[in-house]
Amino acid sequence: MTAPMIHILNGPNLNLLGQREPEIYGAETLADVERLCAERAAGLGLATALFQSNHEGEIVEMIHRARSEAAGIIINPAAYTHTSVAILDALNAFDGPVLEVHISNVHKRESFRHHSYVSARAEGVIAGFGIQGYDLAVQRMAVLLG
Image 1: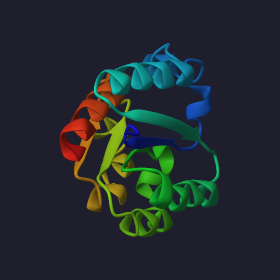
Image 2: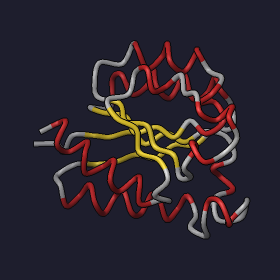
Image 3: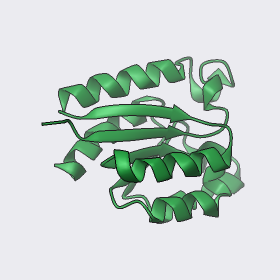
């Protein structure tokens, strides 16, 4: 039996994780996130595939691909969280569970970061736990897919 697949989607500037504003986002890299998620998922009988793009349309395409490849989506849409109806619409066309992750606590930051279009679709939101939030999301996804 094949392990259920989780797609972990990351938005703009997350390719710079570990380099960009480490006082906010920490020193860990996106490769660290990928490793953390893969290890946790394997222990829970799941598989992961991590994707990142700085382009809104590519993120929409990733969500479309997940419709046929993934049982669930974990998404950190980064700045598109607050602006993208297109990403929300794509997520609404996905049948499995969706979890939203943010490395920083967006509610302690600028007021424009307090609104999320993605939250309207997500089963849950994890914010402010650094990259540990991804680990928590994988654990929660295992429960949702269980």
